[in-house]
Image 1 (cartoon, rainbow, N blue to C red):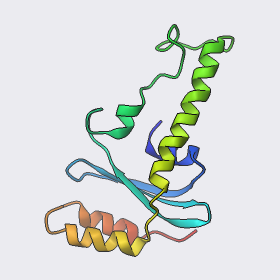
Image 2 (image 1 turned 135 degrees about the vertical axis):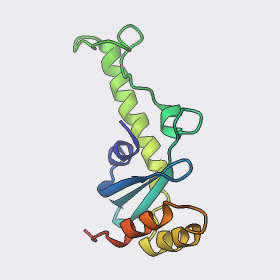
Image 3 (image 1 turned 90 degrees about the vertical axis):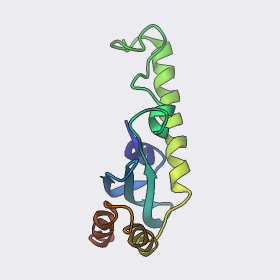
Length: 133
């Protein structure tokens, strides 16, 4: 699970995505959502204190008893936890889809950042190479 899966769970079609190694790390996704196509982006970190996905989710979806082990199909609390996790994932993804940006806007911002962000030219090249769906 991750940011891209959250966008998809929220109903977006992700055409392309990439991560870049800026100070905290940037990810961008070229998406179509509710008849709007453009870029969404966010940052990631190396721990749950600076990575919003890691802070919100852990790698488990089961009930308390099976949380870190194989989850039996017959465990009703595990099934409920999986459904709740999918709903939570979609809600998380929707937050990013509220601000779909045009590629030109993103390019302009990262060109400006290239003075201090050594990964900005890589972001600009990736966005320029996108092919509309």
